[in-house]
Image (cartoon, rainbow over all chains, first blue to last red):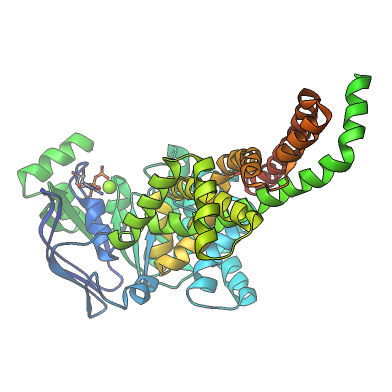
Length: 240
Length: 220
Ligand SMILES: Nc1ncnc2c1ncn2[C@@H]1O[C@H](COP(=O)(O)OP(=O)(O)OP(=O)(O)O)[C@@H](O)[C@H]1O
Ligand SMILES: [Mg+2]
């Protein structure tokens, strides 16, 4: 589904991704872990070309994309993204946030979009907030709206960049629940997170990154219980 | 106090049309300024130097020279090229002048919108243009309002400089009547009251708009 090959990226002289190769199969949930600054977000952002890698290739659903591809906007409709800080549109109601992509990108008539929006908001348990503005709801609710906004586009792939890191502990659980259900429904997902329990329960593959390199990857059991690399062991012992 | 009222009534006939002229010059100046401002703000933030550099130059020249001089340059300069009356010249001069300031206000407001907003829009598959129109502009406009209001008030007061090219606005009329009656001080004082009323009303209107926009989304 996603094929990342020999990806390298520099910010100026600072190399932040070092020859990364990674495959994500359909319906697979890949969780990326690693210390701060190791390049997890950058890797994720390269997948939908919010960042441009200088070397390597990325193919999605069998098609190779570059920064210049005319089809980037089409590809992005297939790849939903959820951000650490939600990035809801503050000048729009919750409902309008959710249907913005439908009406503006997919050109679906407003009435139909609202129907779809309603069922999606219902799915994340926020139908009653449809007419409120993002500033009036909690962080956990905001993140669930952001997930609904991405899901309503019916993407084939979902990218999550620390979706619960900005949330109070008691709000994390609702968001993780939504993500678990999504994984259960067979969504292909790449998730950057520090929620190790989530990784253990939901991930098919866990990837450990350090200083721009993919150090090792494997099943949750392999990575959490029998890490092969010393750096992985050190990292896990620090956080577990 | 009574004396003031007498003067105000006495000058009313002249000062009301003169104030209308002041408002006219201000309105056109602001409207042209907003159009130019949007245009040059977009050029200024463009990644293409061929667009950004001319915008920078325009802003630099306009903000670095006096409005009075710009007014005279445009009036006398353009008279030689195209036939231009003093009134349109005042519109153009005030418009070009305000355009530079408004461009900077818009630029600041656009750039103050969090990058995450653009990223969220782009990841939905929106084009950059669409992101600008649907996501960035509405938020930027709201943020620009306080500075814009301030600029509008400055523009209203600056319109008095049009007196220097014989536009019959408030200050010119006040001077003329005052000199004719040998009561310049009184005449100018009445004009001051007229200006105060106009700027106050403008402040109230823009304040209401700001308030309405704020409560419409209670944006954090
Ligand atoms: N826009 C940018 N410009 C320059 N350097 C950047 C930029 N974004 C990230 N970096 C640098 O790239 C490196 C990797 O950053 P990245 O955000 O991908 O790390 P991360 O693994 O997501 O960290 P965290 O867990 O803190 O989110 C860091 O050294 C960071 O300083
Ligand atoms: Mg990160």
